[in-house]
Image (cartoon, rainbow, N blue to C red; front, side, top):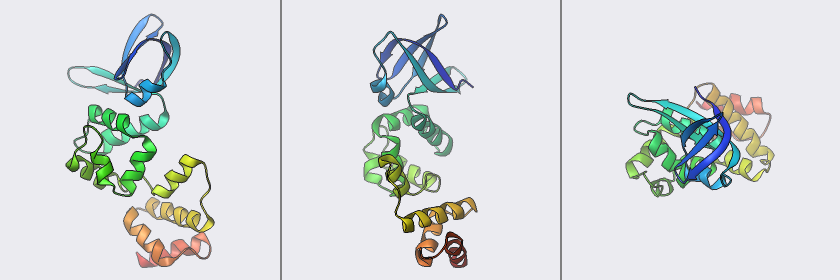
Length: 196
């Protein structure tokens, strides 16, 4: 697996870039969000990459940020019917934070507006990723570099603990809401477990 490439950017377009690494030119398929962050050629760049091997080709996909690469892997590995091309369209049409918030809040209208994602694909994304992406409040707080209020932090920690124990996110969230967030974290988890 090729995890990253560092070299001289020779050419860049909205969907691909060519890097010269020790005299070898690597063509890397990229989302528009990565293209917008690239310097003008010639310039030194580093891209996080994913190598996809098919019967007829070996394709490199490149990303400026770790979040974009993680979202690409999440989509291609966990959503049936989504290949690299659609995953790139999703990343081009939405930031990782906006996408995860839309999945957590089941915002099908937002997801359906992304080029290459229709209503059925949006529904499939929500169904297959809702238990893998966490709660939206955590992303929104991380995106703005704020801290959660103490009660919400306890609820978030309790949710993560229950999900780690194998419970579905939606069920765990209902149990925590019923248990309340007063008391220590262990008490909240114990009370939520009784409700599950």
